[in-house]
Image 1: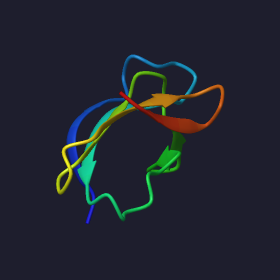
Image 2: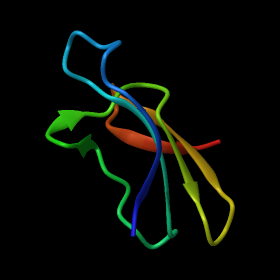
Image 3: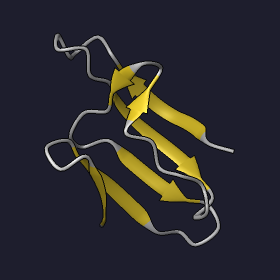
Image 4: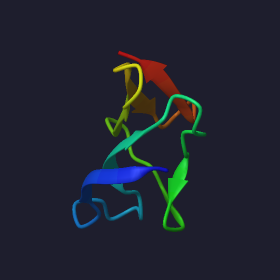
Amino acid sequence: MISVINSNEAAYADGKVKIDLMGLSTDTKPTTWGGKGIANGSMWQDIDTGAVYCYDEAGARWWQW
C-alpha cells in the first residue's frame, strides 16, 4: 500500500505533481500520480527497509538517495 506524505500540485503549471510517498520496497514506484506526471525532486521512502529515493523526471526513474 502506497501512502502520500506530502503533495504540491499548485506550483507546477505543466501538470506535474511534486509528491512524497511511502510504501513497501516491493511496491512499484509510480511515474504518474492521479493522472499527472511526477516532478523532479519527489521522494519515496521504503517503510520496511528505510531506503530513500528521489525522482528523476527526465529519466522517468527513481534513484536511491
